[in-house]
Image (cartoon, rainbow, N blue to C red; front, side):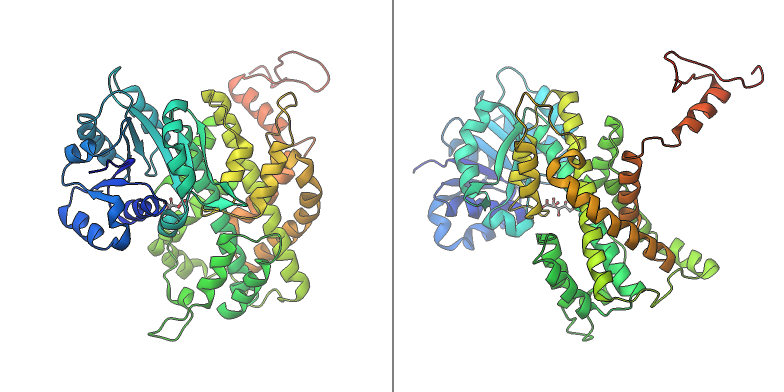
Amino acid sequence: MQLADIGMIGLGVMGSNLALNIAEKGYRIAVYDREPPVLEKFYASSGALQERIIPCETMEQLSRNIIRPRPVIMLIKAGAPVDAEMQKLKAFLDKGDIIIDSGNSDYRDTVRRLNALGENDPTFVGMGISGGAEGARNGPSMMVGGTVEAYRRIKPILDAIAARYKGEPCSALMGPDGAGHFVKTIHNGIEYADMQMIAEVYGILRDACGLPAAEIASVFEKWNQGPLNSYLIEITAKVLQAIDPETGRPVPDIILDAAGQKGTGRWAAIESQILGVPATGIEAAVAARSISSAIEERRQLAAIYGEPVRAGYVKADQAFIEALEQGLLAAKIAAYAQGFAVMAAASKEHQWNLPLATIARIWRAGCIIRSQFLDEIGEAFASHTAQEQAVENLLLAPAFTAQMARASQSLRHIVAEAVAAGVPVPALSSAIAYFDALRQKRGSANLIQAQRDFFGAHGFRRIDKTGDFHGPWGGL
Ligand code: 6PG
């Protein structure tokens, strides 16, 4: 029998869809799942693609059915299962073969797994995939971390199955070892911020303006034709239009307001803190999800203090709807600026040489945060030659300065209105604070330095002379 070009371990939603995508693009794929019924069901439902799928009952069989050097994608639950399956798989592979972990793994685990491999072991690639089940089946965005040699072997397959933006595949090598999973983590952090800011605007329209779901849907639908055009705005309009067949009510109105989280947004916030690069939009989004889940605590506080919202406080006239659109755009620019700044810092820290323009480009299609806006970000990074200093904060990029100067006025206005109306907008307000703090020539940290020196003799610098000084704190 003709051998497969690649292998797949794990036929859950993502694995099976990615395997079908690979087979559809003309590649032969050997597949394995530790649950035999899952394998059978997958194979039985693969239709005409069966001729390019080799179902394998064991990992050993899978390894015998792939052309060398053998790439094997693992799409299994992140964490300990990856270590366990990798340990088993390794025994059937040789030097030069490639184990590809495509789950949402912590990049630190990816680095550890790679470093634990011996001289004669296969190599290890950490590949972030975005786009959910639909993306996996029809074209995801893929962020690869590993050696150039391993990437070369899998590149034709990845390029064939990836989403395309104006013909360019949304897949690329991000750098060595954990680079791919790190970039995916920041993608998810930005995804959290984006979703939270959209939800806050929805909250303003629903609670401060008193609009019903259908009208809010129309607002988002219209925005999707403008500068906010993106997958997340598009699906927001769609979910707001959906009607619950049981009650006849808009579906969002019957969903409990407690957001889940699997951890990648939290990792992004933690990494930004470790690197000392603020990602306040991501932090606010993670915290907001946690607060949303504290249902009992919220109930108790509402009983003691009353609910904050002043319904009907803001009139949803055209001017305010436009301010919301511009304000959301400004907050989005700030959140993306933060995410890219975190990646720039990680790139230096780990010497990954992350291709920031390429990252923006492979996020233009296929992934959850896909948008027109990422094309502009890609341009902003690409317009800088290697000799010039790379733009490390998008707010400094000429392409964004005029937009931000204008849109930030609206952001300030909508945040002020939301606060006055009692609608919590932690991500939107963090964005205006970030922007204001960054462009403030003289902030208030001089007082913090004085306090630090007062209680700990930590010293401070003066504005009028160089050196390290202490204050006249009364002989303390
Ligand atoms: C993607 C998504 C995907 C998944 C997240 C959701 O890029 O395709 O980010 O990875 O939907 O894991 O994360 P939460 O469950 O934490 O919201």
